[in-house]
Amino acid sequence: MPRLGASWPFGRLTSSRPRQDHLCVAKLRIPMIEFFSRLSWLFFNVGVPVCAPFALLPLLSFSRFYRQSSKGIAIRSVQDGQLLWVVISMCAGACYEIGSALSGASTKNTLAFMLAGLLWHVLFMVAACILVSFGAADSTPHGGCGDEPPERRLMWTSVIMTATIAATFALSHYSLT
Image 1 (cartoon, rainbow, N blue to C red):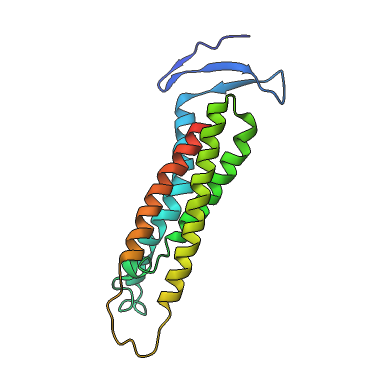
Image 2 (image 1 turned 135 degrees about the horizontal axis):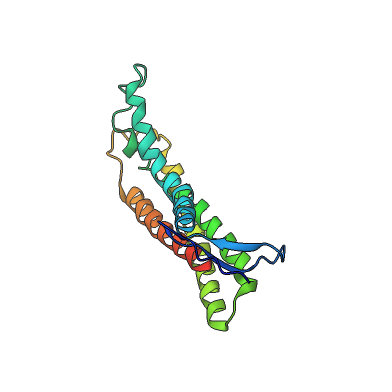
């Protein structure tokens, strides 16, 4: 196998074994490209779903029509547990990734960790489904309640669950790749 010894600013070019799908083509590993690949996965699968509501909803204040109603819109968008929808989707993605990698487990310990991660994400997904249904029921207007201040328990629960699942989803993805 030819060894690539080129030097460039982002590290050495390395060649590994030929690709399995085509034995004549060597797979090149370029460290900076691999870093950007991992960073883009984190951005699109964790950063966008979690941060987009907070980043884009305040833009409504630039519109004359929505200027008054946009005050406090970032808090209102998550106060009834709406971030739990993000938890559900990230748990489903983690379950898919872990489930796809189960057949490639090299040892029983690895298989046990993978099954534990799968169970972890399934339990969080079920809990998020239950909590989001409570949030949807609580957000509907009820007659005779008056002007009660909204409870923040579900909001903080959804924020903590989102942060936890974002970390474990990224951990499971990076440990499998």
